[in-house]
Length: 417
Image 1 (cartoon, one colour):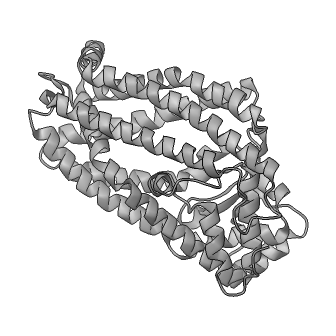
Image 2 (image 1 turned 30 degrees about the vertical axis):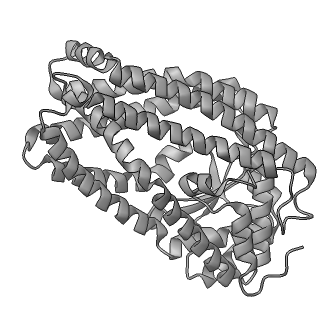
Image 3 (image 1 turned 180 degrees about the vertical axis):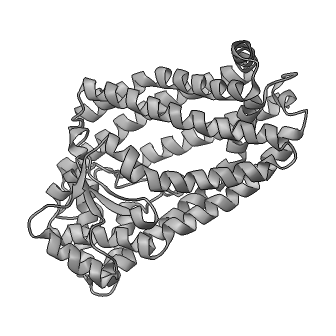
């Protein structure tokens, strides 16, 4: 059975590398062509920079993926999982503490091993293309801070999960699912006010003349003012973006300060309208409900699989701890879920199209949304020519050319230049 699982892993991995290659080949063939509708907004120089950035980023991602996959093969199929499991068992005889130590030490090792790739990404690839503004000191502070926060949260989370498993051996899957669902909601409330400010400074949008536009649009959408924030993203990168965070009374829209410098007021309002579209259309709520339904099914399946004594034997092991069996189960689940990647990506892209339509209906200004998205793609050196199959697996947002075409087909849009 271990041979079959290894073969499935190898085939899946080879397929992902093939997708990556056809995407780069497609870019190489079409990368010098200005897409229809982008004339005057994207020039040959920007296209060349975009192609170079995509190739450099992809090359680094490939090496990191090869490194991670080799480690995974040695760990799961080379006997290291059993050795590591026995090492953890020697540190403590308490099953809950064993489970906590198993995953926390593993996360520390992963962070250390992947740090060179993070450093190279920030200070070579991102710097080469004019994006990086990180100092090495801030990079290290971010790393240590993230690891500390992750260790505390993971330790508490695992402590409760393993305690529930030991407490209710016959129904732990339901208790664990309920706890994790509540924990997810708690983190959505906590993160905007406690965790995110540990890394960035957030303040109400202060750009002169913009507040009135925001108030008018928020009122039109039936929302209260005071939930649109700007973030000092420029202290780490020149990339620009906007995102939605939180839930309930703590939900907010966050704009990068880099984005505010790049956009006109009309374009900023259009981007805000798009984020409000996610809010008003209930995309966050629907994704959360879908995720929890999947988690409930997954918890029950995990209960059944972990109850089966033959699980360690799938990878050639005689006996393993609960934590080690969870690793095997997670590996198998990742193989099983890979074919559903296009469905997940399609659902996300569908929401993006719906948020675009909402934004245009709210502002009556499709051209500002289109120009804002074109600017975002140009400033971030996005790939304007992704292969359709690659995009179907990995793009949570529609490819920018397709997306702009859809926006300009909406009522009120002006013909493309």
